[in-house]
Length: 105
Image (cartoon, rainbow, N blue to C red; front, side, top):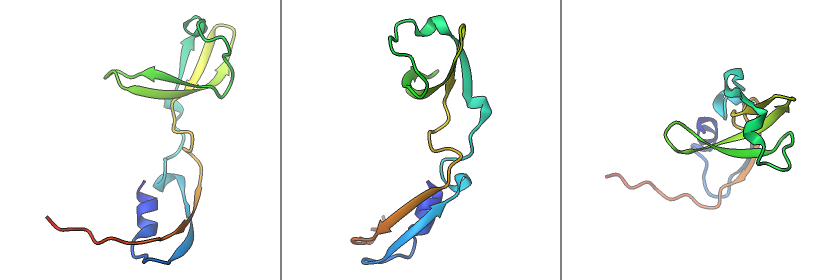
């Protein structure tokens, strides 16, 4: 997350701080194109289908892609594939314990 790294640059051991990172420097804005509709029958094996339930889907490359149930209709289920923190300003409270120099190769 670029905003987090930028906030830490220049800090030394013992420094403390509170940083707010806006969505564009964090997990991005919510993208409405990342909300997909699926036939409800595709979820018949899930006994406790409910809003907010996170389900793992396979992406086109066979990798794992988490989605959150956003809406449950009679025939359609909407799944939100945005990062759960997308669209949110994130606040970090940090304390630098130690700093190790980077070895140049």
